[in-house]
Length: 259
Image 1: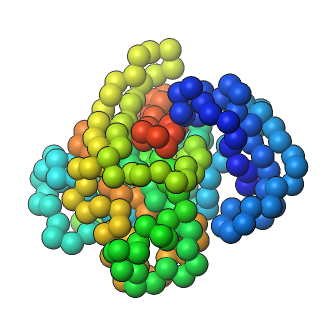
Image 2: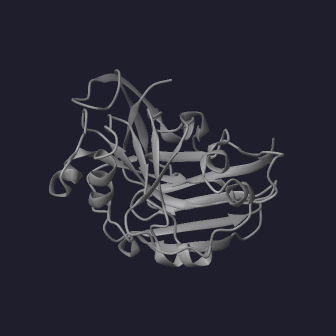
Image 3: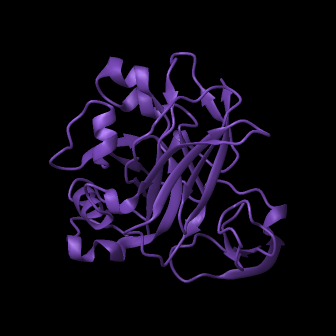
């Protein structure tokens, strides 16, 4: 198990288009100057894990006005923050496990920000993007019935497997106006598009979120900020395949199974 750099270009720009792509192994972690081991494999021959295991996953609620409205909530005047435990993190193709305590588990497609700076604390908005290492796809899986029952988010958002991340971290891109999509279907069937939004619809943009979070808690290399989900959240059932795609970043697919 190691970090690596995906080399080449995929015709689809996602984890489904692996032809011609390779993974070059690096020593240690990717934060700082890369030290390549010389080992390379075809991407199709490796298993992609979550691209990072953060010290914390900071999530932002109601960052799309239409999503706030669909759940009967007002748009917050400041970013609404909550946390997911690192034990919720899984990677591409790992199963989302439906816990028996919930009868309404839902998908939430999101752009995820991966922090690269060491000790990002009380960062000004103007400098916030300098702390970013890159971006990946996320699914903020939520037990909606438990969220409503608890009137807070910890249990509903914190089950094991409730934070798929991947397929990789994309660096050096402008995320101010990217499509965020969620599709749900079954193997062999045409998937249904459930969510379709753009990052330009954020109530609070990425720089604002990073600055705001850093004034609450220090952000460390590898920490992840989930930026909120567009309207269209819906149920997941055993046997589903749920796919989160972020334009220019990648595609993250996970099967859904009972616990």
